[in-house]
Image 1 (tube, rainbow, N blue to C red):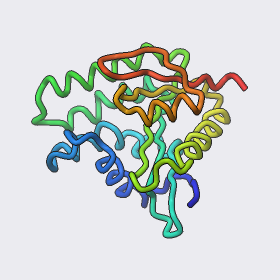
Image 2 (spheres, rainbow, N blue to C red):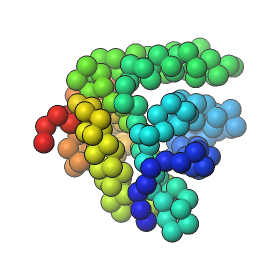
Image 3 (tube, one colour):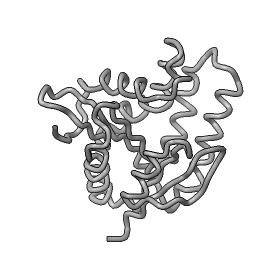
Length: 188
């Protein structure tokens, strides 16, 4: 196993991982599987591939990744312009939920301008891979002089919450069943 930078040839693997690790509601049908990729994957692979790291096996095929928007404000703007319009046919309340999610991110971006998503396939979890992925991203962000990083995780995701706390992320807010956790990168 190794951690490496994302390559364009990884794109379909990352979409597969995104779908396989999504909540069951996003796995219901082809439309929802595409939606989870539009919402949680495509912006990063389209606009910030240099801030993506993948975990690969000997076959060089990704089984985990960490995606990052170094400028969450830019990400939110482009999500509204390029990605949310792709969700034609989704219920207004589903789109409104995601728009609310995006807008809530604006509260944190002054101190924590970068936003991350991390997913690892089930058979590879709890092996230190997540820690290595976050290490790679944190090193990259520090080199770019990014001062902070945040994420939103479901309160029900006990393994995830425990992982982030152990890594050093602090709980800075909570929203509708989720925790907002952040890591200050300006502190050594």
